[in-house]
Image (tube, rainbow, N blue to C red; front, side):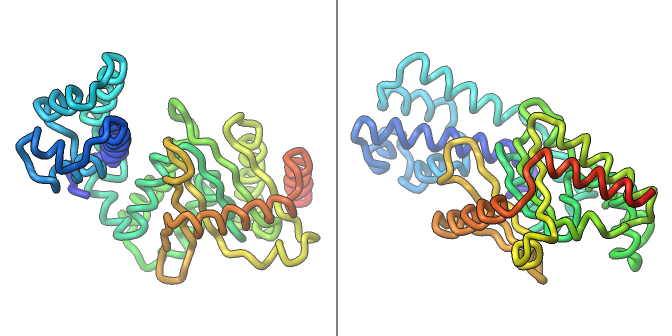
Length: 291
């Protein structure tokens, strides 16, 4: 993705492209047919429909006429185009953050930022976007001790920025699973961990957050699964993407069969987790045991 294009603009382009495909097919036209009317190549039409570019004003007018679009539909698509063009850069697209997140890590942030719903299993860590500043600082101090102070400070700022998806207008709907073993680990000392546990209890009370703990008593479910994330986007589950933590970085899949497999795995883990009320009670118990 070019540095000048916001990830939010990319998702707006995809929405517009989907709508243009629907309208074209509705009137029985092929890409070649509309390319002739636009005076361009089929590749240009394909690029617009795949969400790689917005149509120009002239192209848009020709398309709306060819597709016999109603005034309401025209207005709706125009609003999506205007919204996409007005987006500024997302925080992680700033140069100082781009160097922290090369390759797959950058793609994860872009997807996470645009997701409508996120279902994740965080393994033996507290879910990343539910971690407190002190908990994150401890992880950074241990895992990035070889990096400069400036790098660690910028990374901390980036980690805190990620949490914004939970409190923005139209916040992401989060379903998070974590292992009890991850809550028993005293990361950063008793006081840091107490603060973290209290924060989880506070998060669990938010209407857009569902947090459930997989207890040690769940047997294989409490040890057998590595972290993964399922991200759902506006437009239906055919746009869903899954990410799995691997030793060499995040691995992404949007193949429907792979998404379905991990969704079933998530449901299986949910079936082995404490319910929401019992989860809060267990976190409170762990917090008291630290006193």
